[in-house]
Length: 566
Image (cartoon, rainbow, N blue to C red; front, side, top):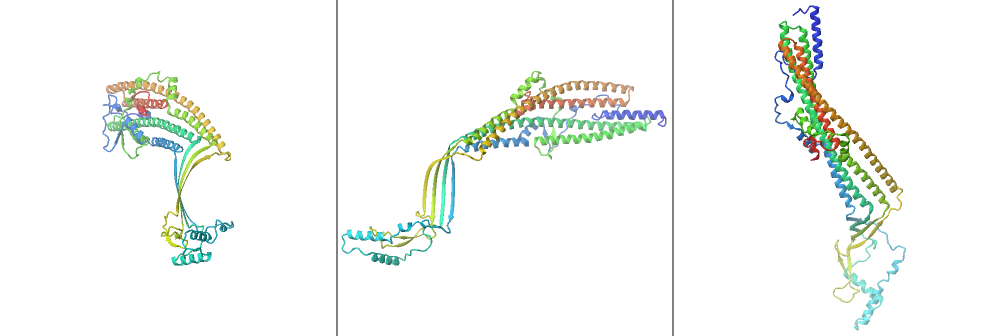
């Protein structure tokens, strides 16, 4: 080897350093380089690696289990399911307007001061007479009883005998207070109401049923979008995992190359610049490995978020990107992916389009409900009331002599009655029809009718807009799928050629014709080609999922998106 002090040697070292730096930039995503004397075959692809056992507490996720877990735990799906349950409750609520309603009411009133209802009317004169009618009735009975010992008496004698009887019985009259006031009033009632005619109630039932269907199609669409999100997130996590593995291989390869170059520099075979170049390559490889490892962790966290798992839950992905393109894709014909056929399928099967159509019908029904406010409402009403008027002083003067068949105007006795005595409590029952018709309410009904018509027109415009958006979405998804398919075919050829090139360079290095740098460049090209191939597979799978979501149905029975229809 030429001395390092010679200008030509320095130029050669600088040239080698430049070539290595260029190879380093080209091999950012490539696998590790094995020693030049030992690297005679291409490094194994990720599918050829020995599988590693996951931690015991780690959740192993395949694509199917990830989708199934998301269908059970995804938060957006749970919200959509809540909307469906709420719509079911609204249907029952709407029917409740047509069912009989039974109301129980109760009240208690304490009358502190009550007015005389006969004040100023002279009604007291009509009810007066100072017991003259009782005196006349007594004398009439005595004249007719043919008993000589019972003769008629004067009115003064009649009043005197009554006074003596009252004093002997210990009865007191006129305890003060308003005789027309009752201290305690209690009312309890049952009211039964049955709607006989209400156009607004009938429209509400139809509208609630329509809203239930709208919520159901919204839930179905959420199932499709969530499935596609899980599929995309799962493949993205797999791709990030593959990239992280390649970065680890690259670090291992750079470390091995650095050790060999260090030994060769000590032996005087290579200049020190080659060792510096290898050190730079190893440092860059470690940085790329750290970034790739972090990207893989972020991809797994995003997958857990989409599924609905806790971010702290450890998961292990089980899958291989390179095996996915053969999973039923050969059954997809160009006729299935034709633009016009795909658009027709989407317009027919998309739940969000069906939801938009039902939403237009729902707005029409709600417009009818607003118009129903101009019609009357007829109800049948039945009332059962039980009223208690209970005074504080519940003493009663008994004037009926139980020992005498004839009325005795001189019999008086005080009697205490209980709170629930039948004299204080009285039932009442009434039935009837109730007719309600809004004649004028400040133009509120007409304004609500106008708003309902505007909402119907808005729903129709949203439906037309969604049709156009679906058409564009499907056309874009078909193009993306065809582009991704072509990229896979191209990258398959590129990987095959990169393998051949690597084998050729390995043989030349073994023969001593090529330099180790050329072998590292060929290895980097092979790894980069493989990563590009994996990226193309990922793009294809994502494009297929996007197309299935745009169509509203899976393309094949083996597709992961077929879970959306189960």
